[in-house]
Length: 210
Image 1 (cartoon, helix red, strand yellow):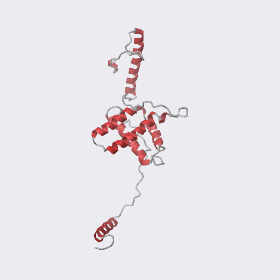
Image 2: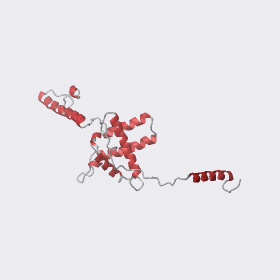
Image 3: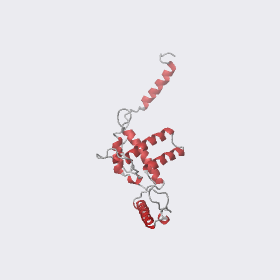
Image 4: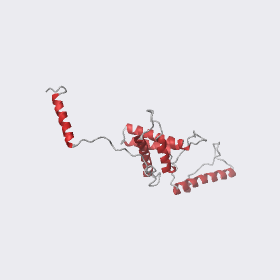
């Protein structure tokens, strides 16, 4: 199957250790393997699904590359790892939950399978996720989670794991925004007065004496 990208394979019956010598069984095993290889190529060419772009595995790879680059602080890397772990939990298990199966088993999830609707559902789930302080994750925390995932998708695109433009976080319209600051800025004359007051205070001391 080398010409199809499948390489050379041993035709082994499941549960056994050696390749079969039965031509009928070998033909059936070959047919199954051929179908798998063809489906893999079809998904890669038509759907842009890179078989190696598994979410959980690529998240580990992404964090490792961040660490090896030396461009990120340990705190940043730890936070990113936490954000991506929650994403993996949601997309491989929580999103699959239903009334009939409230606690489904985890299953692999390819990056190409995750779209904008999935991201919208993930954002809604994050807003209900406990923050460890008796409340739920706030707007800024949700933004951090989405930003970490967006960076993961950018790496996947840059390395050819996904086609250009297939970043579902970037395609979202209703991402949470940072609320405008309510801190009042000082006018120039107010700032000058504050500086002069600090200078005078440093000379006279709290008691008003030189």
